[in-house]
Image (cartoon, rainbow, N blue to C red; front, side, top):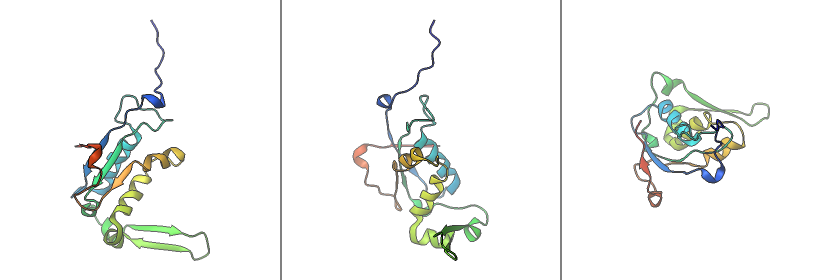
Length: 144
């Protein structure tokens, strides 16, 4: 009896396309589900050192909600590295101007902080409205 653990190879990874509708759902709940799909943790062949995740299309990113007082209190911060180089953007302005970027930052924070995470985030496609341009890939609807 052979008790060796099978390690998945890069050539054995099968990638699918999934669509997630983010309308009227909390930002964190949708972002964690997307991060799980991008990492591939929903597959039995999940491996931490390989990018075995799937492609994810998120539609209606402008209709995503925040619970509690986060809409008034949440702030995105950037720093240029120079003295006085801190820029703060409230979440309300971020959602008006670029709701897709707000969602991207939420998902990126849940992925690994290395070259593997940078490869995973490229498989995420975000659209503000209900339409997307990835219909040629025949994506499946992901319900959670």
